[in-house]
Length: 319
Image (tube, rainbow, N blue to C red; front, side):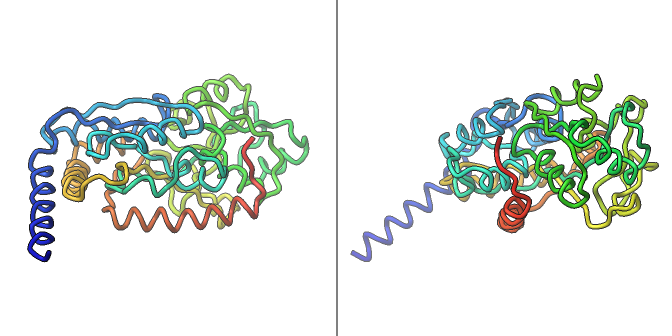
């Protein structure tokens, strides 16, 4: 019996090693839960080429948007756990959706972390039709005409939704939520003035702020954004304690062989260390930052608990 068990363990180890040696033998697909444009899609396209170089195989980006990210998450969760289909996970979907709905077609346990890819602060951006030129006056302006100022989000459960609701709770600002299907659709209406406010990551609004089409009132971090040096932090703008950070990470379906996960994590780390990757991320207004599987899982666990408390305290519900 002991000989049989030993033989089984040896065979399993050999299979795992073989899987790692053979991986990848074909194209790897990065599934993005958002349409083109915005933080998540930008992050996927920043990592795809250097990751292909590190793996020695083609890496393609597939946008599978809709359902507040749930279509993509379900598809990857149900895919073959072989390392060839990876989820480009957006923090708000990964840790927000499970706290907003009891009937998700996926659960955080359906995925195992590969590594963090990018991290970003957010920008409180408004259309020029908003009279206020600073954050304090903007908050007062929303209270003067309750509900008349609309804010955009990338969809129900996105960080732009949850984060703006937290902003409302902390400040008493009175705004109406208008959800969109991703950043691209949202920014079109913000630029047109149909929606006046968008709290989102720099890739969506940075260029429009720099050209004067939108006005940035603050960045939601402890330090100013290098591409928007004249925009104050929320603390400098009179709202200490309001910070909002978005991240994007790669995840594989649960059950993916550990040897394959290790190879993927090493390749992602190597890709993110390339100077061109760092420069491309900086040009998009985000930070390329690698965190290994254990650190990323700890981040997920911590933020699941944080957003559970936040959603309950703020009374945020799906619409």
